[in-house]
Image 1 (cartoon, protein in one colour):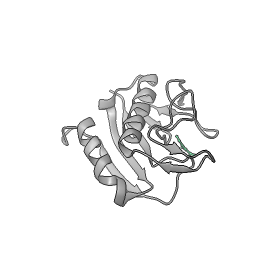
Image 2 (image 1 turned 90 degrees about the vertical axis):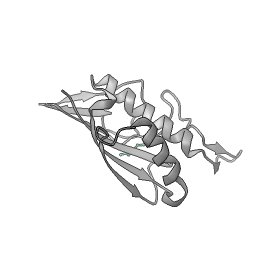
Image 3 (image 1 turned 45 degrees about the vertical axis):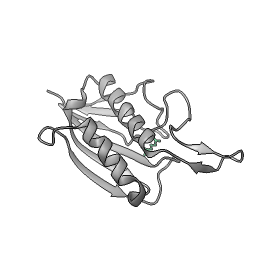
Image 4 (image 1 turned 120 degrees about the horizontal axis):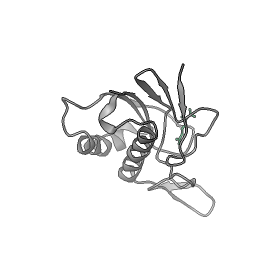
Length: 140
Ligand SMILES: N/C(=C\C=C\C(=O)O)C(=O)O
C-alpha cells in the first residue's frame, strides 16, 4: 500500500508521475526543479525575445527548488527535518557548485542532522533548469 501525493503548492509534474509517494514511514519525492508553482516561470532565468535562455541565477534557482521540496514535504505531512537522503543534479558543476553548496549549508546548518547528499553533474534536465533535487524523507 502507498499514498500518492499531489499538491498545487509545487510546480506541476512534467509527466505522468506524482509529486511524492509514501510507503510506510518512507516518503519518496519525484525529482523537482525550481519552476514556480502555477506558472512555467523559472526563477533567475532570463530569455531573449526568441525564447532562448540568456542567463540565470543559480542562487534564485536553488532557493526556489528548496521551497518546492518543502511544499511537497508539507503536503505529505512531513517536515524539512525529516529528509534523510537528497540527490542533487546540476547542469554546470563548475559554475554552480560553490553557490548551491553555500545555500545548502544555510538550509542545513548542522551536518549531524543534515540528510545524506549526493551531487551529480549531468548534461541536461527535462526542463530548462540548472538544478533538480530527488529526495527521500523518513516520517517519525
Ligand atoms: N522529475 C522530472 C522532471 C522535473 C522537472 C522539473 O520539476 O522542472 C522527470 O521528468 O522525471
